[in-house]
Every structure is written in structure tokens, then in C-alpha cells.
Length: 446
Ligand SMILES: C[S@@+](CC[C@H](N)C(=O)[O-])C[C@H]1O[C@@H](n2cnc3c(N)ncnc32)[C@H](O)[C@@H]1O
Image (cartoon, rainbow, N blue to C red; front, side, top):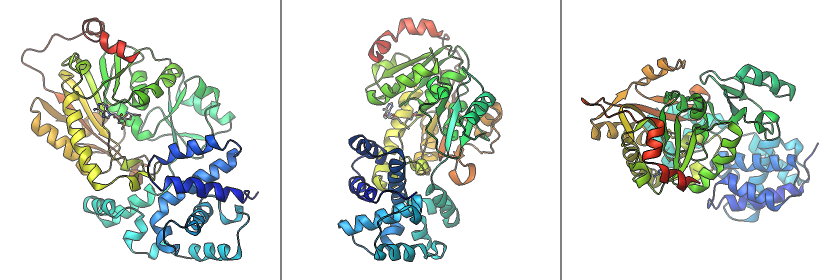
């Protein structure tokens, strides 16, 4: 069935706003749909896919669409190209003869014959960084995958159920889900069904989480009864996974500077059935709430704010919103957060530094700098950690999950251990530390 021609106008309207790059594309889209309640589910899906397709292919479309910028004819043509890619030309109604001919002309272009830079559909600064790091051939493989939509990955909450039961229950919906190769409680769904109304989702048996993110949570190796900090918890994707690994025992602090993000964790927490998670808003990485726990924590995860270049399959606008100078600023922040968080780790404890970036300067660079300036920490080679966690991935010193190799978003992780002191500090039991130091932190979280 053809889509109503009017949705091309809707797509133009929202695209105009998104291309100002003042806010994340998904936020602008949600607000637009809220303001236009008459748009049905199919129309919304088509508009969103159209916008994402334009963001993925912007260089190609603007180089070959034969237009300048800013005019309404330009927006119309961009939307035609995006819609044709997203839903197919045959689903579009109300096109003029010229427009149909324009689409046919663009579709005839064999993109594999284009120069590499044009084929990659990346901003020049990012293309150059990728080529310097991965070489041209691998950059093109990486870019091709980054410019396609991601599958939907789920994490099964083992406090409530197991993977086999979820597969069977999803099949009734009917939703086909397959076990992910690396994350032991992950499932991959190739289509994008609405999950929010499924009992499995409402009851907290499943959460949406990329397989790579699930692997990161596992690298922390958290155990029952331990004191653990998720230093940059955000809306708690990894917090929830770590809490389940700890079987809802011990104490798991979810720190973040963003109250708004931590607020989003709360309904997820309620669904999950976890009772060991304590969200705490901190002002910065040297906050007194952090200092009070210095040297008392068994395991600390730093899922640092980063350029997000590993998530371009889901957030294609990020590549146009980020700049090389922004990445340089981020590296300073990353080093400072890692240093602040490292003070929490007790002797013999574990520190994991992670990003969803594909850029060495945010990854290996930060890890090397940390090791050089923190002689009380040593690197635990990633192959050792993966063997310990029984994750069938081959890595060297660091974890580098790559979309074109592993089918996940791009992720990096380095694992450090604080060397044991000659005189180890008295181990802090979860409850003792809670009473002694962090009552204020809990109060701030409420
Ligand atoms: C990559 S996101 C975290 C995603 C989250 N761990 C998850 O799995 O869903 C990085 C987070 O770091 C937070 N952040 C930024 N600066 C921080 C700081 N100085 N201390 C703690 N968190 C910080 C941001 O608010 C953001 O939520």
C-alpha cells in the first residue's frame, strides 16, 4: 500500500530542523511525533527511516542530488531520496514525472565505482582518522556497516527468566530471536518489533542492549556481595546488567553527573527487580560523595562520555554533529574521569575503562596515559579477562569490538587492577561502608 503523499511534507519539516544539528535526531523526531499525534505508526516509521537514511547518506545525496543547500527544492529532493531508500519508490505516491526521473537517475549510479572518500559517507576529518588507524580498505568495510541500520539486541534478565524461555515466548508474538554469539544472555532480533507492550518487557524479563555493551558489563567480573561502582551510569544500560550478574546482592552505585539520565534509570530499575542499585548524582569526578568511598570499592566501571563513533548505525547524526576539536576536548575529560574513578578502587580491585568510540585517541591513548601516570595499577590483558569470563572472542591487550567484524556497535575496553599493597587496607564490607560514609550520597539520590 502506498504512503499518503502528505508525509513527504512532514519529513521535510522535521528534516529541516534535524539538519540544524542543534539536538540529537531521535530527540527531535520524538518531539515532532508528539506534536503531530495524527501520524500513524507506519507513517512515523517511514519518516524516521527516511531521516536516518538521509543522515547516513548525506554526502552521496548532496554530491549527486544536483542541488545547493537550504532551498525547499533541496529538502524535497533529499526527502525523496531518503524515502526511496527507506521504503522503496513503489511505496511513494504523488510524485511528478521529473521527480520519478530524478530518483531513477540516482538509483542507476553504481556506488562501488565512486572514489573511496565519497563511498564512505563520512565527514572528512573522521574519514582521515579512520584511514590513519585502519587503512583505506578496512575503513570502507567499517563505513559500509556503520552506514546500515543496526539489529535489535536484547539482554535477558536472568533474575527473572532464561534465554531459552524468552526465545520461546517471543516466538508466540511472533518475533524471531537468536542467541548472540558473545554475550551469554543476549538475543538478536532482525526486525524491529514494538516491545514496550510485551509482558516480557513490562515485567523486566528483557531489556534493549547492544551485545557489545553487554560484554563490557561482564568484563567487570562483578561477584555476589561486592561493592561496585558504575561511574558513568547514564540511564543504566550497563548498571542493570551488572546488578543481575551480582544476583541483586552487595551494593552497586550508579553515579552520573546528569540527574536527567539517572531519572531514566528508575523505571528500568523498578522493572528489573534489582534491589542492590543506588543511583547517586555527583557534581563531577572529584565530588565529596566519590571521595568518601576512596579505596573501598571492589570493581569500578568507567563507561566514559565519548564521541560515540561506534554507534553510528543507531545515531547517524553523531558523525555530523561531532568535530575533531570536540574529540580532543573529550580526551581530557576521559583522562580526568578515569583518574577520579580510579581512587575508588581498593587494593587488588578492578577498574574497567570503556567507550563506544572507534578512535584510538579516546581508547588505547587514554589507557596508555593512565598506566603511565598510575604505577599502582597494572593492565590485565583482555585475552585473560575474556578467558576468565568464558567469552569466545580473540583479543590482545584491549577489547575492540568492531561493527564490521563482530556485528555489534563499536566498543573499546581496558581492564586494570590496583596492585595489592604490602599492608592491604581492611576490606570494607558493603554494609559497613554504607553506614560509615555514603548516607549522604544515598540522600542525594532520592
Ligand atoms: C557513555 S554514557 C554512559 C552510558 C551508560 N553507561 C549506559 O550503559 O547506558 C556516559 C555518561 O557519562 C556521564 N558523565 C559525564 N561526565 C561525567 C563525570 N564527570 N562523572 C560521571 N559521569 C559523567 C554522562 O552524563 C553520560 O551519562
